[in-house]
Image 1 (cartoon, rainbow, N blue to C red):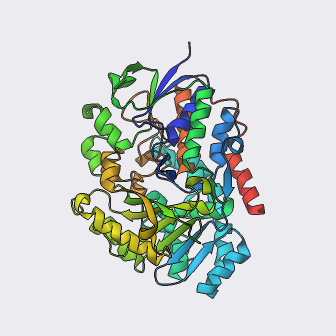
Image 2 (image 1 turned 45 degrees about the vertical axis):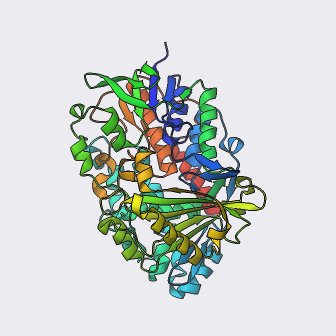
Image 3 (image 1 turned 45 degrees about the horizontal axis):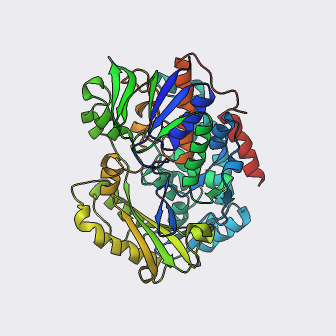
Length: 516
């Protein structure tokens, strides 16, 4: 009789895990609170406009290709991916811009227009981080169950390369003297909800991945990735229950034996939690069953920033790149206001997606969509969003105008706003911290909640709250790690349909990216 597993949450991690486990022969049931799959990687819209709810950048598709291969599927056949060039525009509040491209000579010329002496640093950055990425693969692929795993010879050999005590910004001084150029290569720390002045230097591989492999747009938005995974999961027999909040996990002692959802009780040999980690522990698991991750201990952890979101359907089109990152004049002050002061900035950095320049299907004819995001503090007593929402909305619209989006308010025919309070209360994200637990050195590897959850038995985690961390490609990697651990515990093996391991896939991709 097939072993049964229950997955709480149909986010990208839960969907990828369901494919791997079902392809290995398990009976899989996903129970999702929302009326659609994907969690934050889903699509919202009305009046003919479609927007990504959360992630809009799709990077490094190689890991998801492996997940699809486990089910005998092909990513390119399931999703129409478009590689962007330029990848995005970085626009500096103090003047100047870079249209990021993987074409080395063009990229060097753009850097030279701002800082001639830094142009040669681009290729040196790419060469060093290509080696760095290859050496980091063991960290991305392996579970870390205790501090003893750090003494693996392959992990120890990483220390001189990753410089654990150094920030990304400080590391980039090795290649770029101009602070604006450095910002163009470290703003990606926002994917982790962290400041580049605090974020560990090992995450320089994020910008490397963009230049090495490209930035992609799935036609229809990143929510199409979730829909494609759900289609494949259902082909494998996975049952996906929507609109069905899980009330609690059921235990025999400390061993998970099932869940109680609104629709009833479901039993399984294992439970995988793909819900927001801190909120799921608080809501679904009795505090007395947890030792390392009690409510009190979780409340003392460091959490990422949140995001203020605006989804706008507008008349006409803007002559702007698919992605624009507008960096405030005083970036360090803006980050301090977010992370330390927990106040709203009068000059916030913003990100604007103008997706219809690539994908007209997202809006009615003669219209386009704009997605604007401003990093802000997670839920804090200093900010009452019931009071501040409208004022900060005006601030973001002013920044959009400064970024080149003229008359945006006058041209808007559809608008939706999501604040950190909404992320917290409607989307069940602890403190509205959209990037989960911060990726500081004291909350990484074995110090992060483990894929085989250490406080309970037959309970597993997948998603941004566990190892390796946040971001779509990393979440898909967490699905590979978690699935392997769960199957090993049940005496089963990973699906035979996987054509190659993640390391091989990454290395092949690296060679292809370098050659391109």
